[in-house]
Amino acid sequence: MDLRSRGGWWPALCIGITGIILAVYILLVTSNWIYLGLHDTLYFFSKSRMWERFWLTVWTATVSMSFSLLIGIPAGYALSRFRFPCRYLFASIIDLPIVVSPAVVGAFLFGITTRFPFDWISEYYGIYIGRNVYGVLLVQFTVTAAFCARLMKASFDMIPTRFEAVSHSLGASPSRTFFKVVLPMAKNGIIASMIVVWARAAAEWEGLMLFVGATEGKTDIMPFAIYLDWNGGMMGWVTSMSIVCILMAISAISAMKIIGGKSNVW
Amino acid sequence: MKMIKNLVVFLVISSFFLVTHAYGVEKRLLFHAGLGQRAALNEIKAVFEKRHPDIKVNFSYKGSGYFIADITRSRQGDLFMPGEEFYLMQAVERGFLTDYEPKTDIPAYFVTVIITPKGNPKNIKKIEDFAKPGVRVGLGNPRSCAIGIWHQKTFKKAGIWDKVKENATLSAKCIPELGNATQHRAIDATIVWATTAVLYLRDVEIIPIEHKYRGIIRLPVGVLKFARYREEAQGLMDFILSEEGRAIFHKHAYAVNPVIPVDKQGFCLDGTTDQDMEYLVNSAKAVKDESFPVTKETVGDLAGEVLRQKKTTRAGD
Image 1 (cartoon, rainbow over the protein chains, first blue to last red):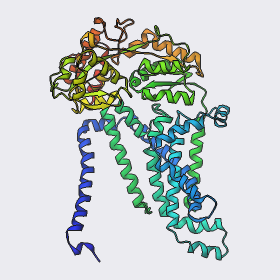
Image 2: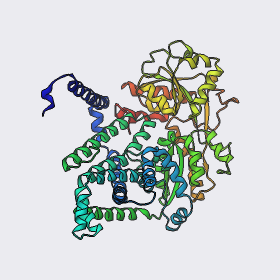
Image 3: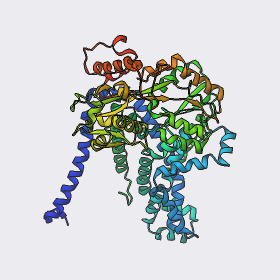
Image 4: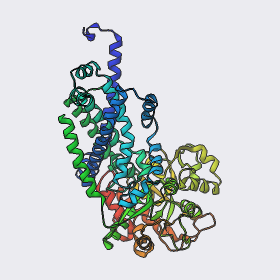
């Protein structure tokens, strides 16, 4: 049944509201682009600083997303399938970083990295986590890992347990079942979650502000660089980098749609 | 299965990338600095690193209010240069900074100026004009930024604080908020540091304040107690305090006169900073008007700022 054929005011209203929201967003981008102007667009887009920041954002977000996935896939599977003590407590705690502001995460990371044994380890190996790119990765990972586990749990929840039962009954081990049956079925969900987690990591800013601070060219990923330049009155940088961020988001989402990622988020 | 394999390959490659990053031989100084000092300090860093190839200066730029919490918890850092002496004194009180010398450790000063949107729509000429009905005034929140304290001080001295408070339409958390609001015509007038005003030459009018209301704000620098490379940090501090270092600050509209006579509250007593104010007003003219000459006589050391902002319509670098 095609809903359009029914007519009436309610579908028209809903579609109209969608159109208005869309128009507002398009207006936001175009008005800023007009404010920037063609000459300045070419000027800022051809600067190497722009693309250094861009790659810094892309690779840090990708690395922290990969680590989050390594934690998130088994954790999400465990929360979705297994019964173990304090399961609900775990499930609630793992939700915390989603609900709590990243600023809190940033402030708390101070406490852990400067105490035993972490201070001792970093002293011994000469690796200082904090105001360098490791700090950025740590903040991004801390904020996104739980988020990732949450999304993974939702993806695994969507898959009926019957297939696993069949696989078990045919004599496959739990790990073989996971890799051969569950994971391929969760593929779309995983891809969708990857994009969401990646975008969340690339947009992280508050935690960085508190824990890392900005070192130019080293820790200032796009959102942080926008804030820095806003403070320096450099409206040209602010506007052009915001436009790049939006283009980045649009391509990430389109890429996901093309690959075929689907989950309960989309 | 293939996806997992790809993921593992990717992780191995990326971790290799991390390890190669981790070990460096050079000495890395960690410099806690106020966001507002970024342009000047980046220039100082460039000169200093060129002279000392074995030293790298890493800045941790933050709003000045964030520093004490950061230093208290992390106990890391070599140098400290917040946006006001008040924040440095907090560090001195807590014992993070043991050898601060208030007489000599001041490389530069902020000077207060009035800014209005381009064309000065409400015709603001002096402090008393802020009390005129219908003027949308931007004030800083004294709890979160130093300029807020100076707004209160200045308008109280002029006896118009109550009226200005009624006119206030913006309570800013940090000083760039005031600059941006003026640039986008959200307010009609405000008072900011000259170093902030110089960032918006194309979009604002700059009006110097008469001596008795012109605030001079001391900007100190110090080596922290837990500095890992004390000697190198001291070297950088000496460079900042040297003639050469001060000259770099002067290029970004800081006042660098060794002595500026002030009263007890910090307001200017004579015309020491008049010349700098004239350069500032001229450079605002030079960015807006193509025919205005940009020379040492007209804009002084601000030529670099003027040329930077002339390059594009929306400021960048």
